[in-house]
Image (cartoon, rainbow, N blue to C red):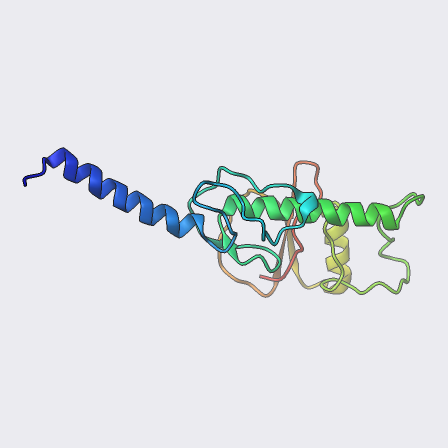
Amino acid sequence: MRLSNSTIVIVLATIIATSTTAAFVDAEVNIQPDGTMSSDSSFPAHWGQPPMGQTRDYVVLPGSYGRGSSTLKHWIEEKMAEDAAAAAATADAGTERRFADPSSSSSSPPWPEKSLIGMTGEEATQEINIADPTLEVQILDEDAMMTMDYREDRVRIFVNADGKVVNQPHKG
C-alpha cells in the first residue's frame, strides 16, 4: 500500500498538532482538550471561567496556581487585584481614604509584608521609600517591556491604565 505525499503530510501535521496542543492544554490548569474547564478547577467560583483563547507560552502563575499561559497569568492577576480592591473597600467602608497615611503611626506592617495592590503607583512608591529609602523605585505599565536582570536595589511597580498597582512589588 502506497500513501501519497499529501496524506503523509496531513498525518504528520495531525500528530504534531495533537501532541503540541496536549502539552499546553493540560498545563496544570485543568483545561480539557475540548477547551472547557474541569469541575475541579482551583480558581474561586466568583472569578468565573478563565479566558478560552490563550497564548501558547508556559509561565509561572501567581499565587499557588502552578504554571500556564501568560494570558491566564494576567487574568489571575486581574482577578486577585479585584478581590484585593473589594476587600479594601469593604474594610474601609465609610472612610474617606482607602489606605492609611504612611506618615501616621499605624499597626500595619511595612512593605514588603503590606500589600500595595490597589494603591496608586505614587502611594506605593511612598510606602516602599518609607521601608527602604535606598531602593530605586520604577513605576511601569503592567504590559511594559523591560530587562530581565535581577537587582536587589530596584523595585518595579506595575500599574494598570488607572494608575493602580496590579502586582505586589518586590525587589529585583
